[in-house]
Image 1 (spheres, helix red, strand yellow):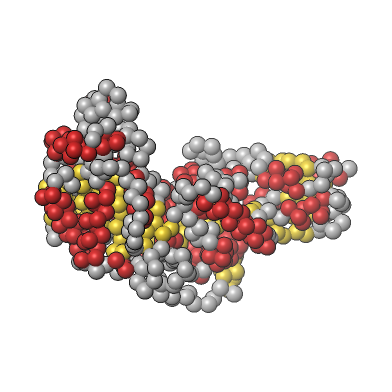
Image 2: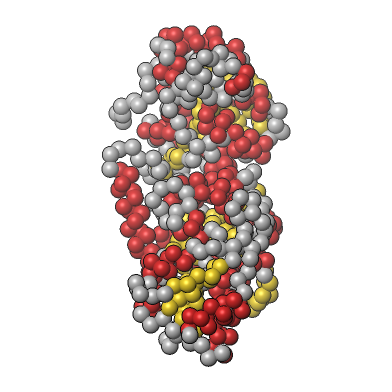
Length: 350
Length: 233
């Protein structure tokens, strides 16, 4: 690994290339334009498929097409564009196809603004599109983690044959900081692999049909139960980061950019003598509920988000009944303030 | 292979499926074709097709096909779409795949209504045609029938555009020739090809099969003249 000064959005590209991306499709939207622009250079230079789509609808359906062939494919967008993609994401889930979607969140609802925000948590982990499906959702909180999560997301998507969502935000996307990157050369595997489900033309085998329409009684239920089983198996991918939680009477919980603010606030609270810990889910689905439940016997929680409270619901569902869960958030581009967090810490640890 | 037909009596899809499958066999591309089925009656095309097929979201087959072709340029990629799928909800995907000159083949079945949902107005419903959502006949407030071939021929990216019909043996033979030419266009790497086929929907039109054939001949062809609109082969 080498340390490199990298912008969050460029880290998506470099991570995806290291992860073996074969085809990228995207449509311009701020604050993630650097991804599509940089992809247009890098993918062509590496002799891979790049296509600027005519809309986010087309982009996600191009991803669907690429995924059908068994190739590693990705699209990226920001909140309003991700809303447009929900139909396609539901189809990817229904057809059990692997793909990676990156959401560099901005303020909403509607056209909103172009500031970093965290208003899309519900959309990401509670469904988003129609039907009873889930997305394996990863939430990086640094440029380096954006790189590694993008790199590893393809393996996860293929392991579970499902779309993987990387939920980041405009702050991390636009931020430049040192990041650990691989120095191994990119894999150049142009062969068409046969996974037993992908469409490549039926030469030498029975033809295949990829679909999500099941009209026969019970057939669709069977698909949904199969998906549910897979989501259950996915639980072993649950990942989080925690520090100073052992003796904490209060634990700050946040993901992505909010977690960076929490990290600083927890450190400062410790300096002031408050027993404050830090907890950051790295996977939002599956959510580290079990670990939060374990911790909840000893500590209360303050959940900080760049929204008016979305992930806090999952924290409340996870913890034991008598645990006190407070929330502090600022929506639509507002950045939670460390001093405000410290003020709440003081009250909650008094 | 014995399979019970799900299409209605007098429907044109069965004829078009057969033509398509014959052409695919004659061109010996069955093992390298990847077909994208629409949302609409032909979503079940794979009941009858013995080659790789995927369903796509409503209207999106051209985007799906474009990606597949760019990834697997030596495969043959075809979409099979109805008028609602291609010309209404999927208008944008159709336009941009055609304009990019994606080397795919679109089989566009125009039956002037939404067949699967019970015969509502489609973008290709002709003027004065009665449908379940134009109970007094399509009038100017509902907008005009969209002429896909005439529209797409203007785009630089398109190579071969033809409109045929399946209302008579002579036209069925012409349709087969057009399908073969369109797939050959792709095989030769020339670029975007589309065959629009005027087809019968007796149930959607509330006509019997015989009347439906006559209606294609008398009413549809006036609105949608048959012919080759573009041939840069």
